[in-house]
Image 1: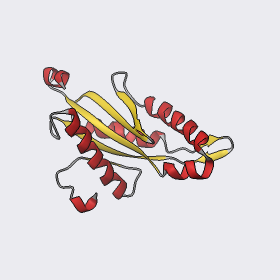
Image 2: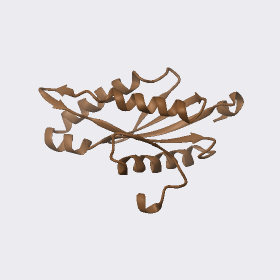
Image 3: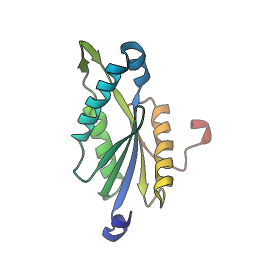
Length: 149
């Protein structure tokens, strides 16, 4: 955030969640689920800039930090690429697996001035993406009603 202030740029925090990943684990087992997670990370990483940071948050959730963006459109373009790169089926041990991702986006400084707030806002936006049919991205908005969560 200090860099964003110094360089007069924005920063995006994205929360990513694989859609229906539990079904893969339940149907095909955790070993295939773990292999799928590795493939997903490789695909997602291929869409990112060298300065972007992606980390596994837990289970099938990831958090992405995107410094030095000019605003919403930059974050949206990356989110769109992340969704697109997972569109093709993944074949693991003869199993064709279709995986999609939902993404929630929070921007600094618009949506928060500290890391904890930005992560919370991205998480709220993620739930909005899930409730909007999955396999899409949503920006954090104060218009999100508690009933949508």
